[in-house]
Image (cartoon, rainbow, N blue to C red; front, side):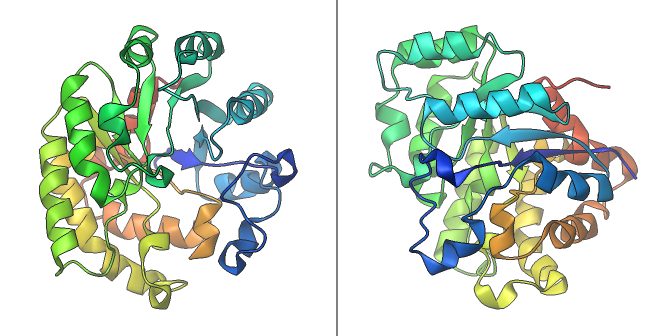
Length: 291
């Protein structure tokens, strides 16, 4: 088995109080309203050959980023942390400089999908803050849906030196590849992929599938294959990285199921093309250690 990097996972402790979206009064989210910490993920990583992870923010607060950096300092398996800073704030540069002193701080992720302005990314970030990302050697995770891709493309063209990764393939409509939304997503992803600083995560797609496709790996593989084909054509193996989106993944399936579905798709490639997706792209993009 090729040693793997999980390029997208979360830890949280709801009692910390800054996970606004993680609401106990929403029945669909009930499986997620509990602690998810390194000791809960460790057996899954070991079972599936994952040697390192990238821990990604789940709250729009700098306090949560500090919490994640504390976890990363205590657990070698966490290779990097993607945190949160308000890039529109006058204080963003100082915050980025402070966080960048931690060797495992790798970049930021605004929660673009949850903001009221679909074009926030094209209009609101302060140039000094984005310039600081570039100057400090940091990266940008784009948590977007298809409706954000136009504004995101504008931002990407303005900042060609900033390494950017599209989280969860921009959450296309899994299982609805014949529709207009899928066609527009495919066209805009091809435009974005033409920019060499952009990578894409093959992650988070099970929860985008209709509930009837949950818990069934074979059905999932058939539903995700059209998305996979587009991503492979647009980005190639050298700019795709695998991730689990654990524990959000638990809303649709489990770590073993998503790994099996991914193996069915990635495993169809030659061995030399599989390695970047399972490990190499994330290692290079986030500057993770090789040992």
